Picture 1 (cartoon, rainbow, N blue to C red):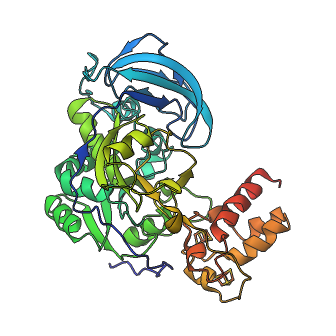
Picture 2: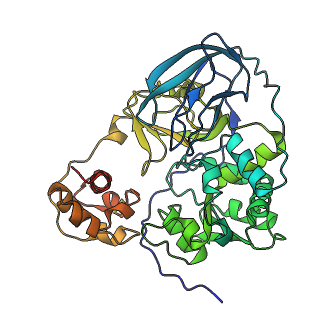
Picture 3: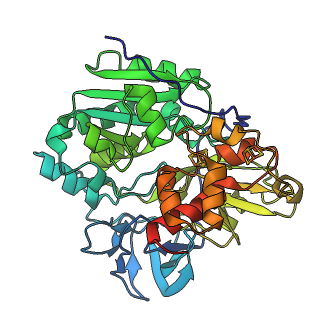
Length: 435
Ligand code: SF4
Ligand code: SF4
């Protein structure tokens, strides 16, 4: 029976995906890498190496026994010169392992394909690979793939929407690594005993849709869903709704409605790891923006600094005013280009003063556009009001915790109000129960 879907609000954005046809280049190893012990949501890892140690590619260099965590491996061969406390691109000050590279890229002797015979082996291998959500969430994948009610989960939803402007790294994964994705789906469905898989891809990527449809045509239970080219199709709640027709209730996780959601690059990496045994040490990213000389899709080592990545892309064309790690809607602005690449970064965008300028805010004209654009039917103006009153109960009533900070409300507001930022602060206020 066909699923009748309610249409969720979304907005039209200029896609600006000018790097779409640029095949992924491999970035040469820089002189130093800066590998933070916080590369995921959860507990920080502790360094397992000391200054003076020689490390090899793929070697475990930081780990913890904390439940929500993922181990960290060296992306290079070279000598650990320092373990320093540095503010990472996540904004926290964390221990950072600084490695001077010898450019030989010697591979650690312990690299071996994992031997898997059971679901438990599979989950353990995913943890050992250091995998976290590569679409931006950075949640440890072995936890996501092992919910308490795994016996009730039967569906894998794969996010290939890549709905943010500029970013094309997932698109290149779908074009360049199609077979890898197919193998990753097979392994995940087999070991998690999932019966159905939906791959959601925006219609503005017809070649990716065609390739994945062709590659999965004989796979039972696997469906490629062409999504509208509107934002934010890749947001978890929206994606689940658009692919399966199900609504994710407030306060529930996808597993509660029988679903595991995974980004397409995450699925591709599962395949890589099971074929080679090489843990997560590099990342495919899009480098773009009007202040970069040669925009590119790049495979860069984890720990490479933004300045080294930009230099590889020909340097700046104009003084950079804003550097974003991620897309223009949900990315994180960083204050200097010495920050290093971490596992969940999928783009570096650099804009000049003109592009990065903030429009001046004016009074609300009560047009209702912010409400009409919100995929979750939240009321940004009411949230803003309750936030300024520090009314925590009011914020809870307005379901502020559901806000996914997609930025649609701010984008459409003719008064240029920073609603999404207020929502983020209001969410924190409601969570912490204090101003
Ligand atoms: S940022 Fe929050 S309130 Fe604004 S449109 Fe997105 S989900 Fe709705
Ligand atoms: S979109 Fe902006 S101007 Fe319109 S109601 Fe919302 S806050 Fe007010």
